[in-house]
Every structure is written in structure tokens, then in C-alpha cells.
Image (cartoon, rainbow, N blue to C red; front, side, top):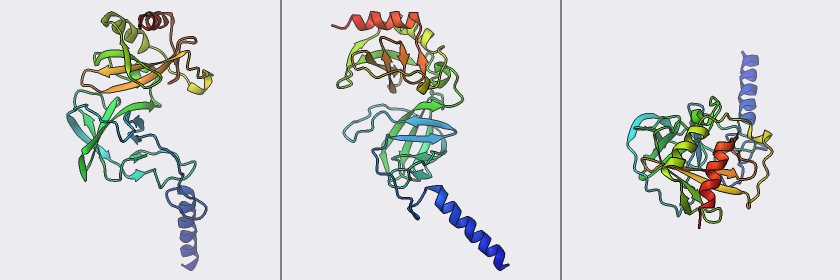
Length: 239
């Protein structure tokens, strides 16, 4: 019996050492500027308004309750910790996660803090291992209001695609196959990169960058000639 108790104690200590969810032993929380993200149902989401001064004006209608945050990484997680379902980087434990009516759950979710209902946040997918194409990662067909080109200096909108270009672009973009971003070897060059902002009908937005020279989207896709022509046409019309 004493031998069994010793084994159980050893297992418990080993779990604490490897879990990286405490400051036990040499494991101390990572001091980092966390992006505002969460993970649920094996999908990783990001909130596009991470700065305290930003105000989100999007009004969405809650769908069903998907779960709640069970672990907050900031001030707790150790180096090398792998994010798990119901983890969040900045949201407090107990924050509720809801689907959004009219929006696929795989695209976006909304969160509410029980102690501060005014602090609701919309999170848009940025990683889904099951997605093989951009359209599977971003199921936004018939949901897009506009596509904007943003300034790489301050993020403000400097141009909006024509309705014809928006339709043609989405037809091509959503069919692009996803690749491992690390294998694209796309060097960041501010003179060749632009920001594209996708604005949905309900006001939800998300941004992606694009290399005018290589046609690479750093999310893990390479644009075709049609996409390149559409973007170049719209970009060249900026005054």
C-alpha cells in the first residue's frame, strides 16, 4: 500500500512539472505581449481589436453557448506551452463563449465576461487544421459586404474594391489551397506588402496581408494571375 502511495505521489509531481500551468519548480510564467486569442473545438481564433484604446462597434446576436474559458495563458503559461481547447491568452477564466447567429461557428465566435457584460469581444478564426482551402478556413461566401485596402502605416482604409472586383476576387481567393506558411519563404517587404480588410455584412472584419510581387498571402496561400490582376487594378487606382 505504501509502495502504491509513493507511485501516485511521483505521478502527481511529474504532472505538475510537465503541465506548465503553474510556477512549480523551474517553470515560471512567460513574460510576453500576448495576442488576444482563444481556442475551442480545435479551432484557434483571434480578436482583431487587441489594444485597450480600440472600441469595437460590431453588434452581433448570440447563438448557442459553446463553452467557457478554463485557462488564461497570460501570467500563467510557461514557455513551450501548447494551447488547448477552452484556453485563452487574455480572457479571464469563466468567460463564456457563444456562437453568432447567421455566422458559421468555424468562422467567428463572441465572448462575454460574466462580471463585465460590456466587455464582449468577437473572435475570428485564424487557424483551423482541418481546413484545406481558404474557403474552408473562412466560410464567408455571401457574407462579405466590402473588401478594403488599408494603410500599412496606421491601418486606416484607403480604398474599397468595386463590387465587380469583390465578387471576382472572392471567387478565386476562396478556392486557393492552403499550404504550410513556413514553406512559402515569403520575406516581409513593406514596399511590396499591402493589407486587405474583409468587412462582413454584420460589421465583423478581419485583415490579411498580401505581397504584390510574389502574390503570397502569409496565411499560407499563393494567389493566381486573376487575383494578382484584380489587386493590382484596385491598388493602382489609389490616389
